[in-house]
Image 1 (tube, helix red, strand yellow):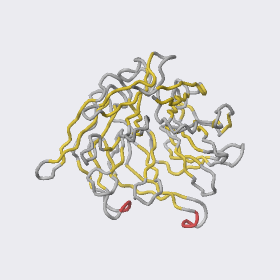
Image 2 (cartoon, one colour):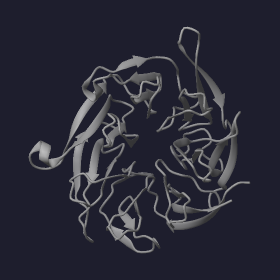
Image 3 (cartoon, rainbow, N blue to C red):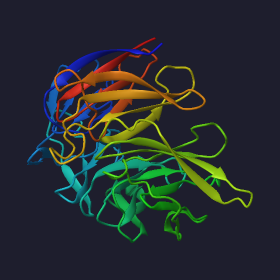
Image 4 (spheres, one colour):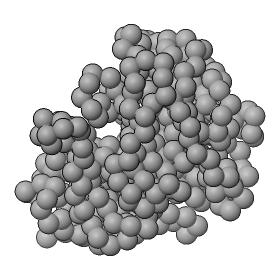
Length: 363
Protein backbone atom coordinates (compact mmCIF):
# COMPACT_ATOMS: atom_id res chain seq x y z
CA UNK A 1 0.00 0.00 0.00
CA UNK A 2 1.48 3.41 -0.97
CA UNK A 3 1.95 6.27 1.47
CA UNK A 4 -0.63 9.05 1.57
CA UNK A 5 0.41 12.71 1.34
CA UNK A 6 -1.41 16.00 1.93
CA UNK A 7 -0.26 18.83 -0.35
CA UNK A 8 -0.01 22.41 0.90
CA UNK A 9 1.14 25.45 -1.08
CA UNK A 10 3.27 27.81 1.00
CA UNK A 11 4.38 30.54 -1.43
CA UNK A 12 4.37 31.05 -5.18
CA UNK A 13 7.92 32.45 -5.56
CA UNK A 14 10.16 30.55 -7.97
CA UNK A 15 13.12 29.74 -5.72
CA UNK A 16 14.55 26.29 -6.47
CA UNK A 17 16.34 25.38 -3.23
CA UNK A 18 15.07 24.98 0.33
CA UNK A 19 16.49 24.21 3.77
CA UNK A 20 14.81 23.26 7.04
CA UNK A 21 16.28 24.25 10.41
CA UNK A 22 15.42 26.14 13.61
CA UNK A 23 16.20 29.72 12.60
CA UNK A 24 15.01 31.53 15.75
CA UNK A 25 15.85 28.85 18.35
CA UNK A 26 12.26 28.44 19.52
CA UNK A 27 12.36 24.66 19.25
CA UNK A 28 10.37 24.53 15.99
CA UNK A 29 11.71 23.80 12.53
CA UNK A 30 11.49 26.68 10.06
CA UNK A 31 11.65 26.68 6.25
CA UNK A 32 14.29 28.79 4.51
CA UNK A 33 14.20 29.55 0.79
CA UNK A 34 15.57 32.39 -1.29
CA UNK A 35 15.01 35.81 0.21
CA UNK A 36 12.88 34.80 3.22
CA UNK A 37 12.12 32.20 5.86
CA UNK A 38 8.78 30.86 7.09
CA UNK A 39 8.30 30.45 10.81
CA UNK A 40 7.30 27.03 12.08
CA UNK A 41 5.27 25.22 13.09
CA UNK A 42 2.52 26.90 11.03
CA UNK A 43 4.76 28.37 8.27
CA UNK A 44 2.47 31.38 7.86
CA UNK A 45 4.65 34.19 9.22
CA UNK A 46 7.26 35.33 6.72
CA UNK A 47 10.60 36.97 7.61
CA UNK A 48 12.91 38.71 5.15
CA UNK A 49 16.46 37.44 4.64
CA UNK A 50 17.60 39.81 1.92
CA UNK A 51 17.89 40.26 -1.82
CA UNK A 52 18.57 37.28 -4.03
CA UNK A 53 19.55 38.33 -7.54
CA UNK A 54 17.44 37.09 -10.41
CA UNK A 55 18.69 36.24 -13.89
CA UNK A 56 15.82 35.53 -16.26
CA UNK A 57 14.01 32.42 -15.06
CA UNK A 58 16.46 31.79 -12.21
CA UNK A 59 17.31 33.12 -8.77
CA UNK A 60 21.04 32.86 -8.18
CA UNK A 61 20.62 30.62 -5.15
CA UNK A 62 21.01 26.91 -5.87
CA UNK A 63 21.41 25.55 -2.33
CA UNK A 64 20.39 26.16 1.28
CA UNK A 65 22.77 24.24 3.58
CA UNK A 66 22.36 24.86 7.32
CA UNK A 67 25.62 25.44 9.20
CA UNK A 68 26.61 27.59 12.18
CA UNK A 69 29.50 29.18 10.35
CA UNK A 70 30.53 31.78 12.94
CA UNK A 71 29.87 29.51 15.95
CA UNK A 72 27.56 31.96 17.69
CA UNK A 73 24.83 29.37 18.33
CA UNK A 74 22.56 30.63 15.53
CA UNK A 75 22.36 28.54 12.36
CA UNK A 76 23.46 30.27 9.15
CA UNK A 77 23.30 28.77 5.66
CA UNK A 78 25.53 28.17 2.65
CA UNK A 79 24.40 29.05 -0.86
CA UNK A 80 25.75 29.93 -4.29
CA UNK A 81 24.61 30.06 -7.89
CA UNK A 82 25.51 29.87 -11.53
CA UNK A 83 25.71 33.56 -12.44
CA UNK A 84 27.40 34.98 -9.38
CA UNK A 85 30.12 32.30 -9.62
CA UNK A 86 30.61 32.58 -5.87
CA UNK A 87 30.12 30.28 -2.91
CA UNK A 88 28.48 32.37 -0.17
CA UNK A 89 27.10 32.18 3.35
CA UNK A 90 24.23 34.11 4.86
CA UNK A 91 24.68 35.10 8.50
CA UNK A 92 21.74 34.58 10.86
CA UNK A 93 21.35 37.97 12.59
CA UNK A 94 19.57 36.45 15.62
CA UNK A 95 16.58 38.71 15.05
CA UNK A 96 14.29 40.20 12.42
CA UNK A 97 16.96 41.89 10.33
CA UNK A 98 18.57 41.40 6.93
CA UNK A 99 21.01 38.49 6.89
CA UNK A 100 24.51 39.73 5.93
CA UNK A 101 26.05 37.88 3.00
CA UNK A 102 29.71 36.79 2.97
CA UNK A 103 31.77 35.42 0.08
CA UNK A 104 33.56 32.14 0.79
CA UNK A 105 35.21 31.83 -2.62
CA UNK A 106 34.76 32.90 -6.24
CA UNK A 107 34.96 29.40 -7.65
CA UNK A 108 33.10 29.58 -10.98
CA UNK A 109 29.59 28.65 -12.09
CA UNK A 110 27.90 26.57 -9.38
CA UNK A 111 25.29 24.03 -10.51
CA UNK A 112 24.37 23.36 -6.88
CA UNK A 113 26.19 22.68 -3.60
CA UNK A 114 26.10 19.77 -1.18
CA UNK A 115 27.60 19.07 2.26
CA UNK A 116 29.25 15.82 3.34
CA UNK A 117 31.57 14.78 6.17
CA UNK A 118 34.43 14.12 3.79
CA UNK A 119 37.24 13.46 6.28
CA UNK A 120 35.11 11.61 8.86
CA UNK A 121 35.67 14.04 11.74
CA UNK A 122 31.94 14.59 12.39
CA UNK A 123 31.88 18.02 10.72
CA UNK A 124 30.30 18.72 7.35
CA UNK A 125 32.46 20.00 4.53
CA UNK A 126 31.00 22.13 1.71
CA UNK A 127 31.36 20.84 -1.86
CA UNK A 128 30.00 22.84 -4.81
CA UNK A 129 29.44 21.20 -8.19
CA UNK A 130 31.26 23.53 -10.60
CA UNK A 131 30.88 21.82 -14.00
CA UNK A 132 33.34 24.09 -15.79
CA UNK A 133 36.00 24.03 -13.08
CA UNK A 134 37.94 21.87 -10.65
CA UNK A 135 36.59 19.96 -7.63
CA UNK A 136 37.28 21.68 -4.32
CA UNK A 137 36.30 20.96 -0.73
CA UNK A 138 35.73 23.79 1.77
CA UNK A 139 36.36 22.96 5.41
CA UNK A 140 35.14 25.28 8.14
CA UNK A 141 37.96 26.48 10.37
CA UNK A 142 36.82 27.67 13.79
CA UNK A 143 37.42 31.24 14.94
CA UNK A 144 39.82 29.96 17.61
CA UNK A 145 41.94 28.19 14.99
CA UNK A 146 42.10 31.05 12.49
CA UNK A 147 42.58 33.76 15.08
CA UNK A 148 39.70 36.14 14.39
CA UNK A 149 36.53 35.20 12.53
CA UNK A 150 35.40 31.89 11.06
CA UNK A 151 36.93 30.98 7.73
CA UNK A 152 37.11 28.10 5.28
CA UNK A 153 40.14 26.12 4.18
CA UNK A 154 40.03 25.15 0.50
CA UNK A 155 41.30 21.78 -0.74
CA UNK A 156 41.45 21.38 -4.52
CA UNK A 157 41.41 17.62 -5.11
CA UNK A 158 40.71 17.47 -8.87
CA UNK A 159 42.13 20.04 -11.27
CA UNK A 160 40.42 18.76 -14.40
CA UNK A 161 37.00 19.92 -15.51
CA UNK A 162 34.57 18.56 -12.94
CA UNK A 163 31.54 18.20 -15.18
CA UNK A 164 27.83 18.17 -14.30
CA UNK A 165 27.11 15.54 -11.65
CA UNK A 166 28.59 14.79 -8.22
CA UNK A 167 28.27 12.21 -5.47
CA UNK A 168 30.06 11.17 -2.29
CA UNK A 169 30.33 7.80 -0.53
CA UNK A 170 32.54 4.78 0.03
CA UNK A 171 33.07 3.08 -3.33
CA UNK A 172 35.78 0.54 -2.47
CA UNK A 173 34.78 -0.37 1.09
CA UNK A 174 37.89 0.99 2.81
CA UNK A 175 35.84 3.11 5.25
CA UNK A 176 36.72 6.41 3.58
CA UNK A 177 34.33 8.41 1.42
CA UNK A 178 35.11 8.89 -2.26
CA UNK A 179 33.77 11.29 -4.90
CA UNK A 180 31.87 10.21 -8.00
CA UNK A 181 32.13 12.35 -11.14
CA UNK A 182 30.64 11.83 -14.59
CA UNK A 183 33.45 9.65 -15.96
CA UNK A 184 34.70 7.86 -12.83
CA UNK A 185 35.46 8.19 -9.15
CA UNK A 186 38.11 9.80 -6.96
CA UNK A 187 39.56 7.59 -4.23
CA UNK A 188 40.24 9.32 -0.92
CA UNK A 189 43.81 8.79 0.30
CA UNK A 190 44.63 7.54 3.79
CA UNK A 191 45.99 10.97 4.75
CA UNK A 192 42.66 12.70 4.03
CA UNK A 193 41.82 16.00 2.38
CA UNK A 194 45.31 17.24 1.65
CA UNK A 195 46.54 13.93 0.21
CA UNK A 196 46.66 12.78 -3.40
CA UNK A 197 43.30 11.53 -4.64
CA UNK A 198 43.37 8.75 -7.26
CA UNK A 199 41.01 8.85 -10.23
CA UNK A 200 39.44 5.62 -11.53
CA UNK A 201 37.81 5.94 -14.97
CA UNK A 202 35.44 2.98 -14.54
CA UNK A 203 32.13 4.26 -15.94
CA UNK A 204 30.35 7.01 -17.86
CA UNK A 205 27.23 8.26 -16.09
CA UNK A 206 25.89 10.41 -18.92
CA UNK A 207 22.54 9.70 -20.56
CA UNK A 208 21.97 10.01 -24.32
CA UNK A 209 20.21 13.36 -23.85
CA UNK A 210 21.58 14.75 -20.61
CA UNK A 211 24.17 14.80 -17.80
CA UNK A 212 24.00 13.07 -14.39
CA UNK A 213 22.24 14.38 -11.31
CA UNK A 214 23.54 16.25 -8.28
CA UNK A 215 23.81 14.28 -6.14
CA UNK A 216 24.67 10.85 -7.50
CA UNK A 217 23.74 8.48 -4.67
CA UNK A 218 26.27 5.92 -3.42
CA UNK A 219 24.28 3.25 -1.58
CA UNK A 220 24.08 -0.55 -1.32
CA UNK A 221 20.88 -1.03 -3.31
CA UNK A 222 20.68 -4.83 -3.29
CA UNK A 223 22.25 -5.54 0.11
CA UNK A 224 25.25 -7.49 -1.18
CA UNK A 225 27.78 -5.46 0.81
CA UNK A 226 29.01 -3.45 -2.18
CA UNK A 227 27.92 0.13 -2.71
CA UNK A 228 26.12 0.85 -5.97
CA UNK A 229 25.26 4.13 -7.73
CA UNK A 230 21.89 5.75 -8.37
CA UNK A 231 21.92 8.49 -10.98
CA UNK A 232 19.22 10.65 -12.54
CA UNK A 233 19.26 12.43 -15.86
CA UNK A 234 19.33 16.06 -14.77
CA UNK A 235 18.33 17.48 -18.16
CA UNK A 236 16.67 14.68 -20.09
CA UNK A 237 14.95 11.32 -19.70
CA UNK A 238 16.06 8.59 -17.35
CA UNK A 239 16.81 7.34 -13.86
CA UNK A 240 19.24 4.40 -13.47
CA UNK A 241 21.22 2.44 -10.95
CA UNK A 242 24.66 0.96 -11.52
CA UNK A 243 25.28 -2.33 -9.76
CA UNK A 244 28.79 -2.92 -8.42
CA UNK A 245 30.14 -6.46 -8.60
CA UNK A 246 33.65 -7.92 -8.51
CA UNK A 247 35.23 -10.51 -10.80
CA UNK A 248 37.52 -13.29 -9.56
CA UNK A 249 40.50 -10.93 -9.60
CA UNK A 250 38.65 -8.33 -7.48
CA UNK A 251 38.18 -5.92 -10.38
CA UNK A 252 35.05 -3.77 -10.08
CA UNK A 253 32.35 -4.27 -12.72
CA UNK A 254 29.48 -1.78 -13.14
CA UNK A 255 26.19 -2.98 -14.66
CA UNK A 256 23.59 -0.32 -15.51
CA UNK A 257 19.89 -0.98 -14.81
CA UNK A 258 16.96 1.33 -15.62
CA UNK A 259 14.69 2.54 -12.81
CA UNK A 260 12.49 4.96 -14.75
CA UNK A 261 13.31 5.78 -18.39
CA UNK A 262 9.98 7.53 -18.97
CA UNK A 263 10.32 10.77 -16.97
CA UNK A 264 12.77 13.63 -17.23
CA UNK A 265 14.84 16.14 -15.22
CA UNK A 266 15.74 13.97 -12.23
CA UNK A 267 18.15 16.58 -10.87
CA UNK A 268 18.03 16.01 -7.07
CA UNK A 269 17.87 12.58 -5.39
CA UNK A 270 17.55 11.56 -1.74
CA UNK A 271 17.80 8.19 0.02
CA UNK A 272 15.74 8.01 3.23
CA UNK A 273 13.16 5.93 5.07
CA UNK A 274 9.80 7.48 4.19
CA UNK A 275 7.50 4.65 5.29
CA UNK A 276 9.18 3.82 8.61
CA UNK A 277 10.00 0.19 7.85
CA UNK A 278 13.71 0.66 8.53
CA UNK A 279 14.65 0.49 4.85
CA UNK A 280 15.44 3.62 2.81
CA UNK A 281 13.57 4.61 -0.32
CA UNK A 282 14.72 6.67 -3.31
CA UNK A 283 12.89 10.02 -3.35
CA UNK A 284 13.14 12.24 -6.41
CA UNK A 285 11.14 14.05 -9.06
CA UNK A 286 11.19 16.49 -11.92
CA UNK A 287 12.95 19.82 -11.76
CA UNK A 288 10.35 22.00 -13.46
CA UNK A 289 11.76 24.17 -16.26
CA UNK A 290 15.35 23.18 -15.50
CA UNK A 291 16.40 24.72 -18.82
CA UNK A 292 13.16 26.26 -20.08
CA UNK A 293 12.20 24.87 -23.51
CA UNK A 294 15.71 23.45 -24.04
CA UNK A 295 15.59 20.02 -22.35
CA UNK A 296 14.00 16.78 -23.49
CA UNK A 297 10.76 16.35 -21.55
CA UNK A 298 10.57 19.99 -20.50
CA UNK A 299 6.85 20.26 -21.34
CA UNK A 300 5.90 16.87 -19.86
CA UNK A 301 3.77 16.56 -16.74
CA UNK A 302 5.40 17.22 -13.36
CA UNK A 303 5.94 14.63 -10.69
CA UNK A 304 7.51 13.69 -7.35
CA UNK A 305 7.91 10.00 -6.57
CA UNK A 306 9.43 7.49 -4.22
CA UNK A 307 10.90 4.21 -5.40
CA UNK A 308 10.99 1.20 -3.12
CA UNK A 309 13.45 -1.65 -3.62
CA UNK A 310 11.49 -4.93 -3.74
CA UNK A 311 14.49 -7.25 -3.76
CA UNK A 312 14.80 -7.37 -7.54
CA UNK A 313 13.94 -3.91 -8.85
CA UNK A 314 12.48 -0.55 -7.84
CA UNK A 315 8.70 -0.10 -7.51
CA UNK A 316 7.51 3.43 -8.26
CA UNK A 317 4.99 5.24 -6.05
CA UNK A 318 3.55 8.66 -6.84
CA UNK A 319 3.58 11.55 -4.36
CA UNK A 320 2.41 14.11 -6.94
CA UNK A 321 1.83 13.88 -10.69
CA UNK A 322 0.03 15.82 -13.38
CA UNK A 323 0.16 18.88 -15.62
CA UNK A 324 1.30 22.25 -14.31
CA UNK A 325 -1.14 23.37 -11.63
CA UNK A 326 -1.89 19.81 -10.53
CA UNK A 327 1.45 18.00 -10.47
CA UNK A 328 4.41 19.52 -8.61
CA UNK A 329 8.16 19.36 -9.20
CA UNK A 330 10.95 19.32 -6.62
CA UNK A 331 13.47 21.93 -7.77
CA UNK A 332 17.24 21.71 -7.58
CA UNK A 333 17.41 21.01 -3.82
CA UNK A 334 14.36 19.73 -1.95
CA UNK A 335 14.25 18.77 1.73
CA UNK A 336 12.94 15.99 3.96
CA UNK A 337 11.98 16.74 7.55
CA UNK A 338 9.46 15.74 10.21
CA UNK A 339 7.64 19.08 10.39
CA UNK A 340 4.79 17.96 12.70
CA UNK A 341 6.68 15.61 15.06
CA UNK A 342 4.66 12.76 13.59
CA UNK A 343 7.60 10.38 13.33
CA UNK A 344 7.34 10.55 9.54
CA UNK A 345 9.41 12.50 7.04
CA UNK A 346 7.55 15.15 5.05
CA UNK A 347 8.67 16.39 1.62
CA UNK A 348 9.39 20.11 1.19
CA UNK A 349 9.48 20.84 -2.54
CA UNK A 350 10.65 24.17 -4.01
CA UNK A 351 10.68 25.09 -7.67
CA UNK A 352 9.72 27.53 -10.35
CA UNK A 353 6.12 26.37 -9.75
CA UNK A 354 6.20 27.48 -6.09
CA UNK A 355 7.07 26.04 -2.68
CA UNK A 356 5.00 23.13 -1.37
CA UNK A 357 4.88 20.79 1.59
CA UNK A 358 3.74 17.21 1.15
CA UNK A 359 2.77 16.08 4.64
CA UNK A 360 3.42 12.36 5.08
CA UNK A 361 0.19 10.82 6.43
CA UNK A 362 1.55 7.28 6.52
CA UNK A 363 -0.02 4.16 5.06
